[in-house]
Image (cartoon, rainbow, N blue to C red; front, top):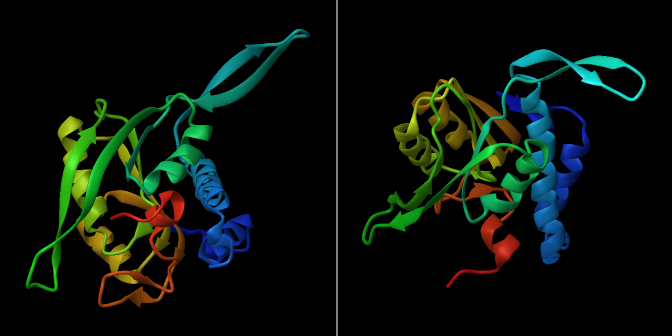
Length: 214
């Protein structure tokens, strides 16, 4: 597991602005910070991918370099994941994409909840690198449900899961239920509250990016 907040970098500035209630009022900046963190994490993930040697013809000669053997498949959970996903797509600009609609479905009379999923679109994942993104890793149940739904489209060679803010409970849940996945986290916060929101967190990323739901 790689946690960006464990070392000084620009990622900390972007995360701080996402959390700051005064900066959050600017939706454009909020979405852009989600996107920039997607770009930073995409760059770090790119270091783990397979590469091959190629020769590039220039106007003056031939340059040798290493290029990715293939692009990963980028998957995200609607709707909060869209700006974060765009950051990954800015760097993996030839990647295939997958999308899933998953949300908390509260059960009347119970403290617990189940995850409802009403949409999924995916390419063939067989033998490919899958990058699954969601800005907030709270309980981890949405990510787990989407991940196992995606496996119907083929078994990836490797899977990376990226989130900006995570709870310790969510990290532990994914590590126990999806041990084959590599985790990339912006920051791990203190705990989940009684409503299963991350504390101190940043609020509802989807509402802050796109407006409140009714």
